[in-house]
Image (tube, rainbow, N blue to C red; front, side, top):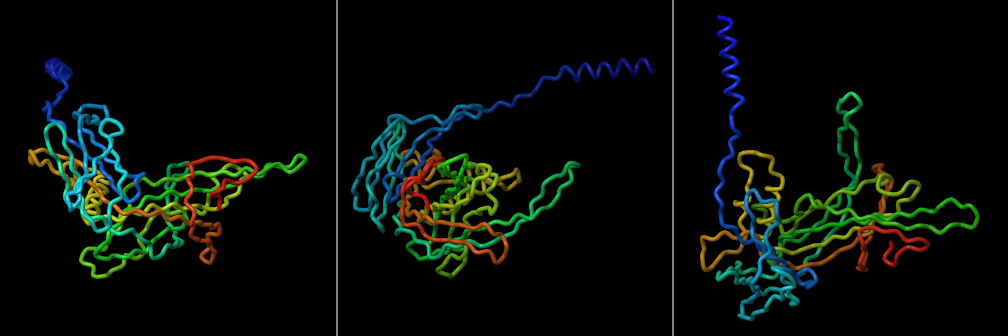
Length: 350
């Protein structure tokens, strides 16, 4: 009996070890057009990029589109042709007129694609910029793997905005420039000071602002941007001194449709496998194929007003009564992401 049991077990093991891995068959589907388009009152930011999706198993980037034409058409029928700088990449030198409506028109592969009619908003403004002290509890494991709580104090940056019928939705892009300087030890004549800087970008998701649903107020109060740390020692060279932050805030005036689109994208970025997480095919843009409505088009035509704001911030004392410096900067020179200069600070230094 025992011998039969051994033979049976070996037979079962043999069958199990001969199983083949199952590879499900995924049908080849038609690639779809992707449209990324942003038109603002700053021609240097205007672009339309056309690509096509690739196969499920492909590791290649999206395919560039060739042979397309792109134009903007306003409510009066005036047509502005886009200039193609490389395959599928177009730009426009024109500046949209506030209050005028525009349509993005694309002709490609014997098909015509058009966006919804979008109105150019007025130039955006900020009614108030401020920085509040906040405390957060963070956990780090000790040598035994036990989570140990610690209090981290930082400054949360906020803006107050107006929410009028002509403009009630916004999108922000932020960049923080950390300024520092270092004076080497004197071994004779005083050595020159080294001035350095380092940029921090914020790409976690789209920072969008709009009035709360069912709200009757015409203001958006205390919209959060991001945090800045009090401690900067790990970001700069040893023995160097923190000199302050230059905070660069790009503000875009957008439409309700743009706000809803980017809100869905944020939900997709933060999806963690739950049943009701949005998937790519549920994030619909504002562009359709006019010659074949069944064709899927990904992307969005954003017609935005734009303004840049800059602020200088300085704070080193994390106590509740610690003073901070916040002042607006009215100069807008180019600042690289990082660098060092010996002897004198750059012209844009604050």
